[in-house]
Image (cartoon, rainbow, N blue to C red; front, side, top):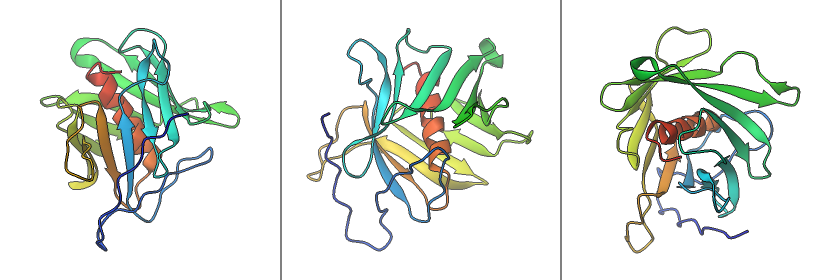
Amino acid sequence: MAKIQPLPAPASSSSPSCCSPSGDESQILQKPAVYTVWMKSLVLTGNGCTVYGADGRVAFRVDNYGRRGGRDVFFMDGAGKTLIRIQRKGFGMFRRWEACRYFAGGEEARPWFRVQKAGKGGGAVTMHGSGRAAYTVDGCSRKSDYKISAGGAIVAAIARKQTASGVVLGEDVLTLTVGPEVDHLLVLGLVVVCGLMNRCL
């Protein structure tokens, strides 16, 4: 399978180091991480996205074999094992996206998180058991430039990828930076929901 070569990390102590979670459960890592998100499916005729880790190999993927913006989408690891199921529910202003995690025993019955549009294309994220927005997505209407915040602090950001020489790549090749001590699987799930909200998956 083809690799997307990651960019070299800047020589700074505050720069994120690349790493990716593994295993059935989502991980909360102690260092920031950088992923490359290609808003294309690995399936030639499908819709979806592909997430590359620090080594340039496929870490996660979404292959939506149905039409764009499907009601039922599966987020998988690089080997095709389902980690999250995302469903679109409701209509119009009541439309929302619900995500359930998959474990060894199958799909979790209750939603892990819910996302509903708020403001100009952004989203409010509520976690299971909480009626308040735990995360917010700011600028989601611009699919190639937005941030994810928690308690007013930015925990992840996505933007168009640049090469080492400063060339900005197309709107479908993005860099996702995830801060330390943040659940990477949760953030990646939110990125997929943003793609569904904007009908680019």
